[in-house]
Structures are given as C-alpha cells and as structure tokens.
Length: 169
Ligand code: SME
Image (tube, rainbow, N blue to C red; front, side, top):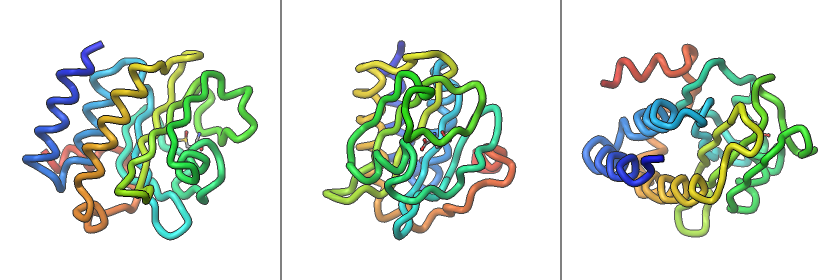
C-alpha cells in the first residue's frame, strides 16, 4: 500500500490549495485505496458532527451526528481513533450502508480540541489495521493545519455527494 507517496501528495495539496484541500483529500483517499469504500470528513459544530465532503457509492442519512453518538460521536468525544473490525458486534454503530462491515474513525485535532474527523467504511471485516491508523492519523494532523481556514469552507453536505469536487478542479 502506497501510504508514503499519498501522504506527500496530501501535504502538497494542503500547502498549495488549502481551501480545496478537504474535498481533494477525500477524493484521493477514496480513489487511491481500494479498501476505503466510503470516505467522509465530519466537522464539529457546537455539539454535533456535520458531514462535509464525502466520496463513496451512496449518500449517508447520518449528515449530523451528536457528539457521543455512534462510532463517530465516540471518537469525537474521546479524541481517539476508533477501529471497529466488525460493525455488527459494536452496539454503538450507526448503520449507513448494508455493505459496511468495518469502520475507522480518526479525529482531526487542533491543540486539545477535536475539530473534525475522517470516517471510512470498509466492505470487508477487519479492513483497517495499524498502518491505516498511522497513515490516517498523519493525514488528520495535516488537515488540522488548515485551521482556521476550515471554518470558512462550506460544511453543508454536498447534495450530489462528491459531484462538487468536479467544480473545484
Ligand atoms: N457508522 C457511523 C456513522 C457514519 S456512516 O458510517 C457514514 C457511526 O457509527 O457513527
């Protein structure tokens, strides 16, 4: 898995095109890594996670998740990465897609605050391991350097999913 080159590209995107970076990072993660079936970024607004850019086969109904609810809300509350190897065995799991069997959620932190998170669903059991965690935590650290650019970017879910990406490039 080419985590190193992807990380370099993400670093370049964030440095050279910070306003487009969340959309482009989501697109890169989804397109580059076949086991990242659905990739989204949620931003923290007040006590809620609000879905930002995403790319995957279908839209999720969970466009707003209270902090503390679901796997996403748990990661936002603790500030720690959550890896769920089998979503059917985790009572916290909020179902989005029938095809999802595992999930990883990586908080994006600015200092001690959680400002957002990367959420990735996988179609295989146990799809995410230590390397995914290390890579995605590095990606989250890069995304956190966008602060305070991030609050100025739209956080309203794209009605057509990643279609908005086309307009950015
Ligand atoms: N499964 C998540 C909800 C978000 S969807 O996966 C896109 C959760 O349990 O919080």
